[in-house]
Length: 115
Image 1 (spheres, helix red, strand yellow):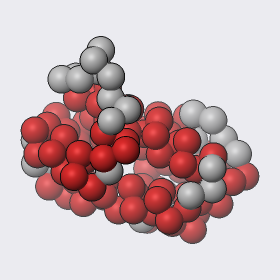
Image 2: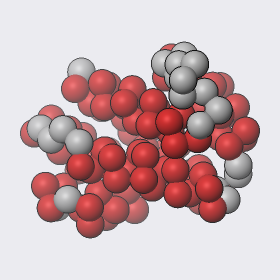
Image 3: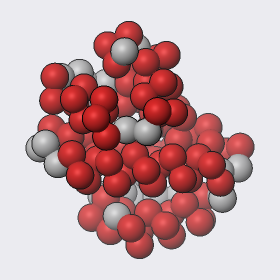
């Protein structure tokens, strides 16, 4: 999976998140992935655990199919940035209960808060 396939899948599965990618971010893979992460963080803060689980599963699936550029963008601009960003009991609970093991392990590696 490359950028164009990721963006098409994001638009079809998460149209509300896709709509948040602004002109400055469009065409820049790390920025596009980061925009999706920010949207998921908002959902975490609004306690939309079901949405976050769907997003985590989407990220996991994309990682399984990703080429090197997309894999790097997801690991850095979604997983790592999520791990080092704002921390709260609510976010921790959602990650612990809803994220796939691979994502939880990557986040715990980046920041002990997530262990």
